Amino acid sequence: MPRRGLVVGNWKMNGSIAFVQALTQAVGRGVAERERDRPLPCDVVLCPPFTGLSVAGQSLTGSTVRLGGQNSSEAVSGPFTGEISGSMLRDVGCSHVILGHSERRTLFGEGDAGIARKMVAAFREGLVPIVCLGETLSERTAGHTLDVIRTQWLALCPALPEEEEKRSHWVLAYEPVWAIGTGRHATPEQIQAVHGFIRQQLNDHLGATIASRIQILYGGSVTPDNALAIFSQRDVDGGLIGGASLKADTFLAIIDAYLEKF
Ligand code: PGA
Image 1 (tube, rainbow, N blue to C red):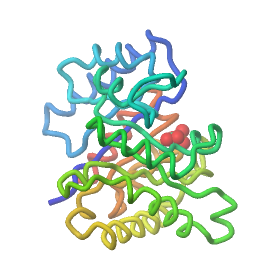
Image 2: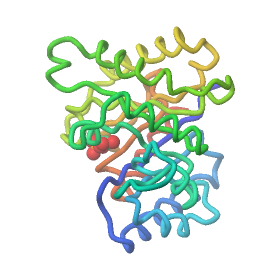
Image 3: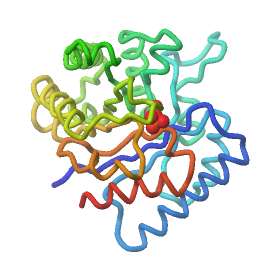
Image 4: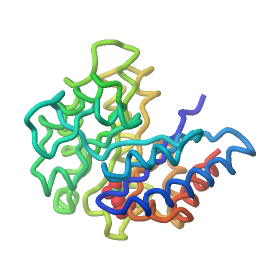
């Protein structure tokens, strides 16, 4: 049976309440139209900024489109000014949370160990962590891509829950740093090479059954024009979409590209 796919919109720090409401409604309508023909082979998750989560949740009442946070704290509650906990995200209706995005890593100093602690907290709160991995341009040029991915991945392993059935309830997103927001996406061959490597790592460390269930997304300058070629790769289970998720028609066209995979 093919793995269920996942297409995620990462809106980053964009959007007033009115913008969030209009865009969520438009995506919700578009997804509902497509579901009239057949159930979608993928889930759709929108990650507006924190201030938009509540209105986005209201706009998605009755929709299969789900909500995610763009980050969350490793702590439960307390004196952590500016932080948002996993239980707060659950409270506002989130099912997913993006962790370890390269903007968090490079601009806000997040490292592998801290990302693993956030992942533990997300599992504890019943959120599905979408954890980002990826190399910089200089790391790729130096031929270190797979070493970087291996190091980032191994740091996450201790954060996985003990319970066998929960170990596949998370998502990996391969996002080469040089492809994010640059208009320069990795080629389908480069993407499959890394996704295949990640799948092999999952297989070696977690076993074949879990490895076959975990979704691996690609992110970095995905557009309606390149989405089909990327999604057609064997180990690509969907996308983490930034800029192109800020307009309903381009985001829905990317979902359509995923539907064409089947
Ligand atoms: P982009 O962003 O699609 O704008 O390149 C992807 C991301 O940052 O997740």
